[in-house]
Length: 116
Length: 116
Image (cartoon, rainbow over all chains, first blue to last red; front, side, top):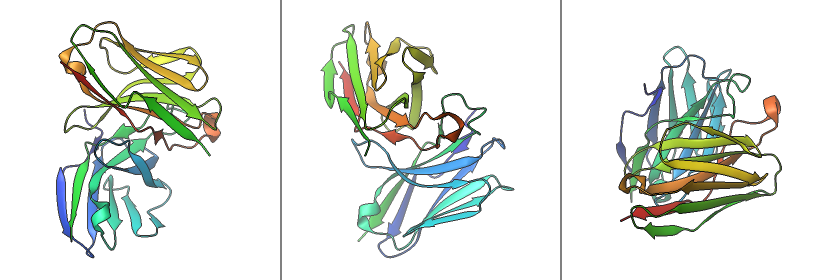
């Protein structure tokens, strides 16, 4: 049972345009969501996160939107740059008081390619 | 600041040989530690996590094992490698301060293991 799903394995965007990466989840107990960026042969790096009490969080070119009723979150990158080309993973967590060890549930990732 | 190290960076081992991958974290105490594997073209699979010295939780039954001999050291081992053990192994840490701890996990650079 895949609790966090990224249904688009790949996305191609022109430089300067908006990139929108989507993520759906099934567990209504999730209360915190994160996005990671991963280059080949490197470890993922934390990008941005959002608590379930919010519907938007912004950090520079990156904005994460959360729609709890639809169990959907998205990462917007504006403007997209060639250096943004990487695999993006969304992840989710249940509240720490119920989540021994602070485990994260990851999606399968979306490979973003930003064309110059 | 905190840093996480993994070694070796790459490893080629024959089937049936033993394995030992090491992960160390600097700049924090009592972290939660995690081992993940990313198979080719796949997502991140949580293998083990640890909330303290000598405390190991296994997520997936397999021929791998983990140990935490010191607070900031996490070791992934196998007595006999299988072809299916090939992959990219990632260690991660998280602030292990109980309910006050944050959700974010921070990843090491990874080890590329090829079993031949």
